Image (cartoon, rainbow, N blue to C red; front, side, top):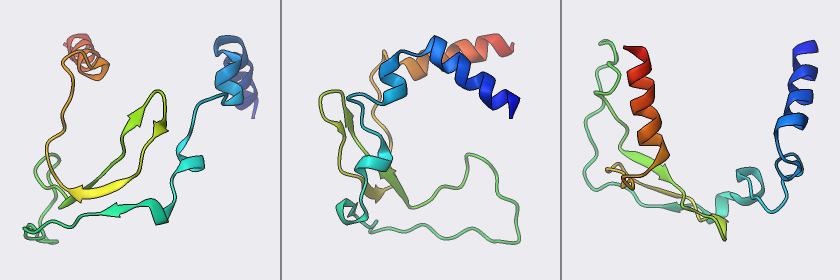
Length: 107
């Protein structure tokens, strides 16, 4: 309980008020509705893995994935479940740079 209170105090001191009050930001809970979900089923489902064999991370994937676009001026877009496919990332994506820093730090 004390840790939670300390976390709230730090949040108030470190985060701008707009983060605490949500301001113009939109969050998933205020935007996503089941009626808005678009569903596109795959035409080539993969064979399901043998349940008696262990799952290996990064080797077995689902047939579908959830995709939701986000734009600064509009917030979250309409959610879609679509066939599993590659993601397109901009080369300057901060996630790519962060992952390299993390890798270098683990050496």
